Amino acid sequence: MTSRPLATAVSALAEEPRAPLAELSDPAAVLAGLMDLHGSVSLARELSLLDRAAPSPAPPPAEGARAEVRALAADRLGELAEALDHVFAAPFHRRNKLPDAGAVLATLEQTGVLPARSRAGRALAYAAGQLWEPFGELAGRALGRVRLETRALREELAPSLRALGPGAARLERLDAAISAATQKRRERALAELVPGLARAFARGLRGAVAALPEEAGLEEIAGWFGQEQWLGRELQRMELVVQAALAHEAGRLLALVDGAAAAGEPA
Image 1: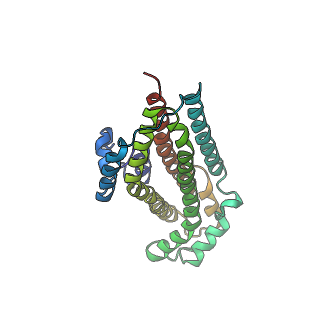
Image 2: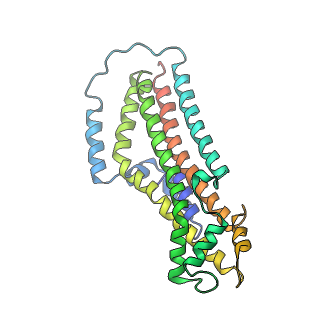
Image 3: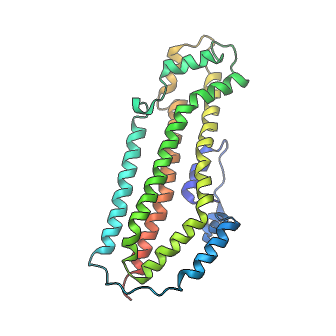
């Protein structure tokens, strides 16, 4: 059970197109699907404590505080999106350590996939694993950055959200409780994205190798690197998955900020 952005990411990894998930329109079903027994018990305990302690008196928020919190969240998320766009605008920059056409050809030759000796089976699977490794590291770093930076931003915003008023403070505590109760399932869903990308990469490599002429060389392998060729498409798929993960985390965070701002408004 996943959010709409993550469902989009999973669909991008599927071998066959998937039908839309109707249950995503039911928030209760989504929440139930994200919790195991331990998470459900933990959430119930936190909810029972939520209203026990009377909120301490606090001065009213400064004029413009709600807009400032929203602007801070939007600015930080925009900076993160821009940084990730920069990574995928030039994925073969040396900092990413992705192989060039010569390195790909060498791997195919060393694993026996070329020249035309074994274009299927174990040799091709081994070659796919070898070639995917640096691409997988790039995907893992990008997804890890999304997770860490959005989590850090959530923690940074918490005091400001609570300062918007008792209603906002209660909503912030409720969100924290739900996040803790669903953390394992959400992280598991994110962890499944990189293996899914690896499987898609292996499928793409299999099709690309099958389409090579019998005496394939560097020129043919270099053709894989075009934007509309299979390797370019796999990088586009990776970028889509990373963007979906960011949209998921950003959507949760901005919904909390907007909800807290509304809850903190005077009656």
